Length: 75
Image (cartoon, rainbow, N blue to C red):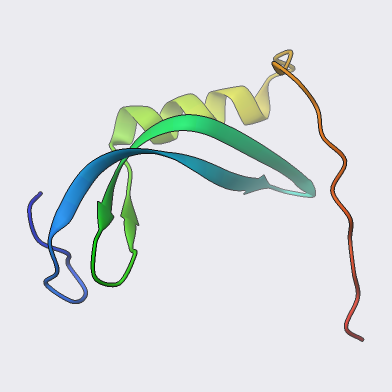
């Protein structure tokens, strides 16, 4: 892919940090191969990358490390 589907900006291959929500759980994946639009920031993942993240999220895989994340309510 060379052009963004939404804004037609240039898409570049990068490794990113991705926050992935699965049900009530939140996972942070680092060094994720992705294609990112340099204009609007839209992120595209290859199907095998999505499958890998879903596989990790649905099985009890030991993470490299765990961090605390503060939660705020605006209600």
